[in-house]
Length: 249
Length: 357
Image 1: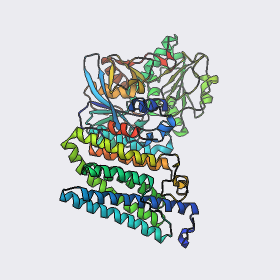
Image 2: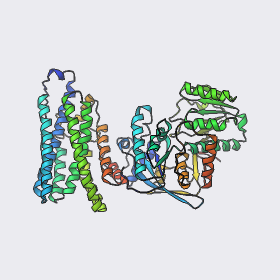
Image 3: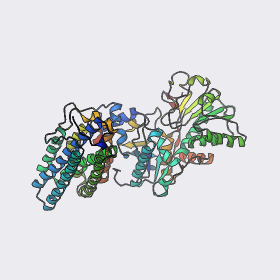
Image 4: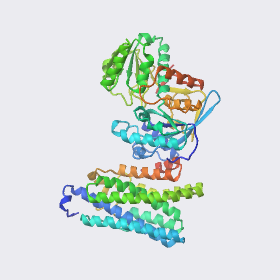
């Protein structure tokens, strides 16, 4: 991979910038998946207010994707945008199944709890690791914005739990089984055997060391935030513990 | 913190001392379908936020029943060192928040988690209707009572014996020093910090109590007739070959301080200290008793946890043990008597090989 580096970037290693490019690629694909998910939901649901909310969410994810693309361009970092990327495609398929059932709440759980917890936590960890340059700063900024999405969804989902305690917990468990398993597979500690369709060359997990990152911590922190978010919604702690300990390791 | 609001009398906050227990617990959660290795479990374990994992019901011999819960901090057994201090303090505080949300009257901080209350910061108790206790007073009570029991088991008179306390300047260690002052022939004091060790030795000398101190266990071990090991980590340089043949050892650390082959000379010379037994019995819901508590003595448990239970049975929701160096012999006797009233006493002498005969 040939990367043309401005003077400010020369202090970092080639592996570091290769990693930064891969991380940006994953983030862009993730944001585009989010944008597509909400766009799809907009077309399937009937409630006007929910429709409007979906458009707003889709636009927000689009802005994040654009932000990442711009910073990649500024730093001459080649990114891979692949609509058929293995894990992100699976996430979109899961979302599409719930959207088809016009289940707005399940879709919100997928997007605003499962995916946003990963985004907030991983963007924060990556942002801190790359904090001495604009790439890192952008990750930190977007992490904060995504955090607001989680906050917003917690109130909505708390109200749903109140309406139907057992039914809601069952739904969260189904969504967890559907979507969190994909995220857990994506972040297992071993390198991905086949290309995920996003990393440039081999699995980016092999390069995380270049920014003092490791997949165990990235994944662990994301799971921690996910469980804390479920706690705040009111899911019994023993339930989410059971779910998380049964995820692929 | 992932728990429904409820009103319970006590909460027990703790951590596991070995990966074997943790793996069994994770197996329990997956109905035994996964068979994960300790290495696999370790990939996620310490990232799990503290949460209530089971209900506890304790029965007093008076007929009273106290209801509580166990809150696991998910502090990993190999992350108890200084390197993880900040992370662990955050976890204990999150677990404390969990106890508060459940409106527990009293919460006991088991094992390593008591660090949060042993410092100068008592904010945990200042702003909370749930009160927190380290449980160190009842732990100390069970240690000293079992030392006395072990001495009579071997027909030994404490006044003729030299007592080595490893971790002498800690909260429980200094409580043991206070309790045995004037009761043993001489103290042998060991701790990591020379300055605090010197201060403790001087205070004993001022009271004309014989004491010798060193930061090096090996210097004191050959002289010891009894040993109480009560540090926060494994003692690496405890050489069994330096011990007297008729030594009595109380390992009261959590995780265990002394790691050596018990078979042979020490099989009936070493006992697990600070352990209590609840005569009226206790139960966990769900029933994960054996994944957590695996002792050769029925209804056994740690004194630090049982202190919170005793206070709950007494409806005395006060932070009985806080700070460091505040445990007097009077406090030890007081909590011991309250515990006895409810059928909670020092456990029969046992170690990992089984009960002493």
